[in-house]
Image (cartoon, one colour):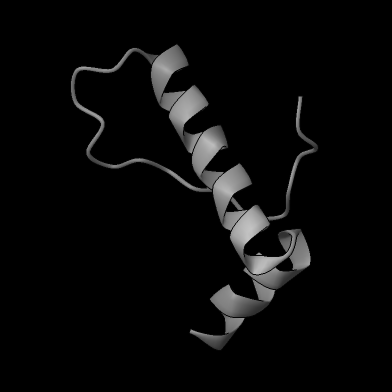
Length: 50
C-alpha cells in the first residue's frame, strides 16, 4: 500500500469502471507519475509551477 500523498488524481472519464477499478487506476497513475518525476515532492513542485 502506498503512503497517502498531499495531492490526488481523479479519473474523470472512468465510465464503466467499478469504484475499486477506478481507485486502482488512480493509484497506478500516481505511482507512475512519481516514478517519472522523481517522487511525491517533485509531483507537487511540478503542479505548483503549472
